Amino acid sequence: MTIDRIAAKVRAGERLTGDEALELYRRAPTSFLGRLADAVRTRKHPDAVVTYIIDRNVNYTNVCVARCNFCAFYRPVGSPEGYVLGFDELFRKIDETIAVGGVQLLLQGGHNPDLPLTWYEDLFHTIKERYPTFKLHALSPPEIIHLSRLSQLPVAEVLERLIAAGLDSVPGGGAEILVDRVRKLLHCHGKATADEWLDVMRHAHHAGLRTTATMMYGTVETDQERLEHLLRLRELQDETGGFTAFITWSYQPQHTELGGSEATGVDYLRTLALARVVLDNFDNLQASWVTQGGKVGQLSLAYGANDMGSVMIEENVVRAAGASYCMDEVEIVRNIEDAGFIARRRNMHYDILGDPIFRQRNVPRMRELATARADGDSSVPEELRFYPARSRAGKTSRA
Ligand code: SF4
Image 1 (cartoon, helix red, strand yellow):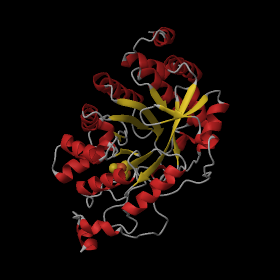
Image 2: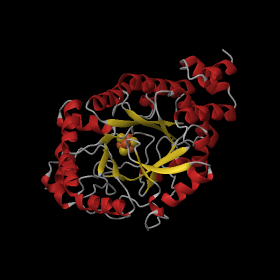
Image 3: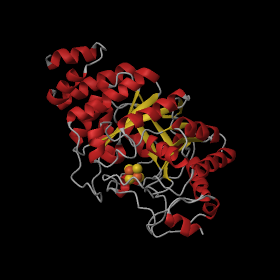
């Protein structure tokens, strides 16, 4: 089929087959692909509103047994640079988030064998007691699988217990590319196969949770495998309708074992546009300004994105791999409005919460992203001694 015929199908709101989408991705000029994605975004969001959320991306531990070769964030068990955040540190972070108008914590971390399921349950319970309306968007599918293996409980039961403790929604991290050939090469097949990742999301959706979906591209995958990833997400969304949004970002190579170079801005915009055209059953696509920078992030709004993601207060994972872009609410809103859109705050469900908060009251400006822990701070939280450690290093430190 010619590019024009495929484009006509997209404009008519018809679903593309894998072959048609691949043809479009390989052969359509970038601006053409952008215009198509923009037409789909406009059809789904005719009111010219671009949303964002104020939340805090907190990584509660960097200790991880998974050892993905694209990750610069993790530290092995027993490393002097390994950390676990204490409950009090997390409460302080929540207080700071609320002070700038934040509504939720995006809580993710390494697969730490010395944090049992009860640690998460106690943390979630305590947060909900102290901050009843504050939301917990927490634990990506591989973390839930890790907890299932650690506790020897089925995924559905782990999810049930976490929901009872206060889990509100599940972030779509750890998807990378949902093709097992790629996952084996990235050493992330052990933490979750493509089917296992999708199955956690299926369980979460059936349990009534909404989740996001992600894709990290630009490592070892082919363009066909990028597309396969999107098709697998589209299929699960047809089945459950549980995904609120899709977010894609490029692999950040600095300080990683895998190395290599980063995908270009054009590659990002083409991939985002492809996602908008293929994921016809997803309402929301986020711009990944954290990896692409504010300027490409703003351009994303012409390539299918209708959301600027999160006002980042803290970032640890992408920063460890070399990217450290920072935009507070004022900057995000400036980028949205300069691109000709109306900026609105939202929650994880994409309900509109209101106009920019800095126009309603004074909020502190953030010129720099916070980190989980200050450099050199190796303090061990007091409450950890109440939880059994699994690793030898953990047992020794808690003896
Ligand atoms: S990407 Fe996540 S699971 Fe993989 S090594 Fe890094 S922290 Fe661990």
